[in-house]
Image (cartoon, rainbow, N blue to C red):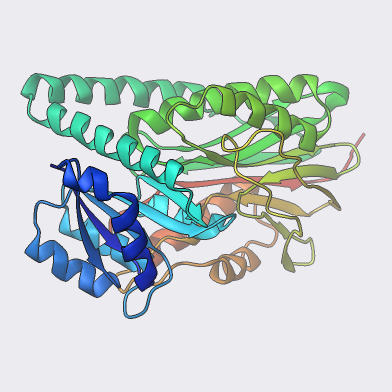
Length: 385
């Protein structure tokens, strides 16, 4: 009988859930346990070590849901966590997924969707437990990870263009054997360059394969669609149709003109890039966040544009950089990233990436890397023709 721990400080939710699931509880399909915050949740887990799933709100007193997720990860329990958050709260959703959340539901809660999510989560947990009981399956899984890692290495470009008008260099350090981040760059019509920075939810083999599908769709669509916002709209609709695992990907897609230095872009829930001006000033670009890819069809994505002047640098990254934590749980943060980028005035693209990655690693110290560290630097040198 699966046991579900519900963590929420709203007393009405307990009554509502008991009412909605009373038949399933009576039939012995579920057992429900309740806590009002993260501290009580840890106490309940101590009393109920057989809990299979945690359904937790984010905003709670004493200990919030994101902190609880970090505690669950440290306890290394064989459970799955699902978070409850406000619709469109992409920052908290990304943070939760990076801290080990299996899935999320949005407020106000749709109980049909909640039941589907619970069933999917418990089914996934059972599949993984069955796999762990078999040594042969564990060996096979390790082999699959090796294959997926090699596939990922082969699909990400490692040879960077040599052009007198610009420099381009990218860097990725996976947190595990297989990561969910990806970057890409490719030539478009009229000698323009497409640049992509993206982050797939989750880790491991499923994230790697979803990453490969997303990259292929985005590159293929970009070649035929010159408008970045329309490109993301089409990719999103394609991913929604073939997304049985309910995964999603944040993405920032930009189109760069190496003749004029013009950059047009569109954003799908991703971290906003920075510009390092030739003067040394650093500023983050202004753009609406947009919705992550793979969740809802028909979404129209925001679009923006910037003009790079000779000597300006365009820096893209994933939250593995901004959310890298030290021993005390302090994130590296975008403010610190901006300060590090101020130190990069006049550096080449490859050296900027190395400088940023080194700063992130220095911040984390001996803490294990919890997310992929990925960045891409585009430095506009000017039209020399």
